[in-house]
Image 1 (tube, rainbow, N blue to C red):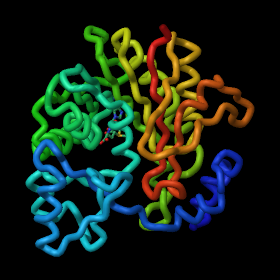
Image 2: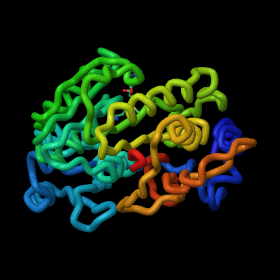
Image 3: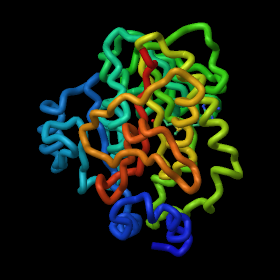
Image 4: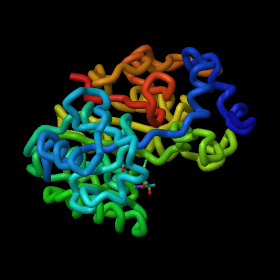
Length: 305
Ligand SMILES: C[S@@+](CC[C@H](N)C(=O)[O-])C[C@H]1O[C@@H](n2cnc3c(N)ncnc32)[C@H](O)[C@@H]1O
């Protein structure tokens, strides 16, 4: 591992279990997983078609998919099946987010920070293209790949909006909300091809302030029985547990248990001099030495009854 990455992550030695394996995993290239898009094709139809062309898929998480790796394929994005919308390259941990939130068919869903659309399209798939998803993305240049992803994958229950997520209008409540917020992205840092951002990046950019405003606005937009998933791809407690702790202190919110297809580590309740609500143990941290993918943090949130 590079010395830059070493110093960036050294501060997490006490909170990341089996820290030396974690450090080793950062020296490995990030594997490319993808999801079969069941809005357009079923795995039992696509797998034999690919096999005929010499492409054998390796299942990930569960034996029957829809998550796979194709070790012989250099870039999934160059396959005909990609352009046909049968496949979507997506990190395994990113796929877990929509599964944990699990929006029901015909429900009303808000994806607060949606581009490039991996999780929006996965939610549309789980909903069988029913109900309505508002895919919100602030930046116009990011709305273009978002709309492209949705069109390619045959998503027809989604409209794109361009609000500041933290100021999303309070006119309509949602059954499910995904807050996959902008973050320092530490979970993507591997030495192969990427240089870590300097430690302290999140403070310089005031990310935690924005994340706190986003999580509170998401919560205010929930229906009485609504559920929200707060997610980041960073290990930084100031962007994870501290943000959820802020919500618990300022709203009648609670952490719901997470039933993920792959077990992660529980969230932490103490960081530096800060102590967080014990309920933070219900949040989940995914690490690359446990699940070979992007590092992630997830908190499933509902209203207190
Ligand atoms: C972590 S990415 C979302 C990834 C997406 N959920 C997916 O699975 O493909 C965060 C997104 O939030 C957008 N963003 C940044 N600031 C925002 C804001 N204030 N309001 C809404 N979106 C914002 C970024 O442009 C970025 O596309």
